[in-house]
Structures are given as C-alpha cells and as structure tokens.
Image 1 (cartoon, rainbow, N blue to C red):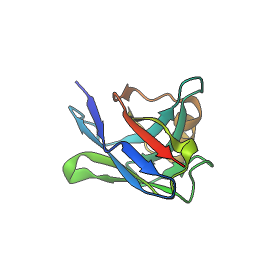
Image 2 (image 1 turned 90 degrees about the vertical axis):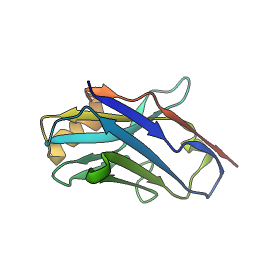
Image 3 (image 1 turned 120 degrees about the vertical axis):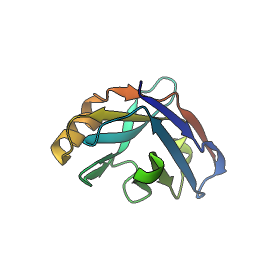
Image 4 (image 1 turned 30 degrees about the vertical axis):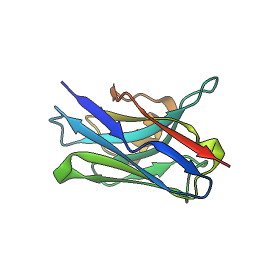
Amino acid sequence: QVQLAESGGGSVQAGGSLRLSCVNSGYPYSTYCMGWSRQTPGKEREVVAGLCSDGATNFADSVRGRFNISRDNAKNTLYLQMNNLKPEDTAMYYCAVAPGRSDRRFLEELMRFQRFSFWGQGTHVTVSS
C-alpha cells in the first residue's frame, strides 16, 4: 500500500524559508511523477510544483523562482524548498504521486487537473506578515 507522509510545516515570517519533506513507502514504481499541492479554506487546491522520474519539473506561476522541488531516491523522500515566503503561501500542503508515466506533458496535465493517484495527509504552513 502506497503511503505518503509529509513533514516540515510550521510558522515563519514573511521572507523566511521552510523545507517540506514527503517520505513515501510501499511504492514499487520506477516511472512516476510526484507533486506538491496546497489548499486554503474556501479556495481550490493548487498544485504548485511537480517532478518526474525522468527529471522533468514544473512550477505554478505563483511560486516559480521561490520554490524548488527535489527528490532523494535513496531516502524515498520528496522535498519542497520554499524561499521568500509570503502570507499568501499560508496553506495546508500535500504530497502526491502518479505512477506509470514520466514526461513533462504528463506532469503538466497532472498539475492542471490534479489527477494524482495517491495523496498524503498534509502539513500546514503559516506565513505571517
């Protein structure tokens, strides 16, 4: 059974940084795309960053240039490095994975339509002004 466990959320002042981690287990796939999404009450969930096993990455315009996504395969861990945080980045952040394909077009579709197969429980980020 695939399990995704996020950590690293917390409270930070505007301009600060946080790094989120997502440890995945029970995941036998070598071809996949993974992503980080966020949601605040009353707003639609937004996928902010994605990464595929072939190295493709993509970012939402709202975080491009401030966030970076990476993965440590030896640790089965996906990271989201968030820099220059803004109050509007306050949200619950979720890790997700979609097995079976690894290419930029697939990643773009996943991010647009949020068609990931498995989701974690989330970790909360609060950015104060």
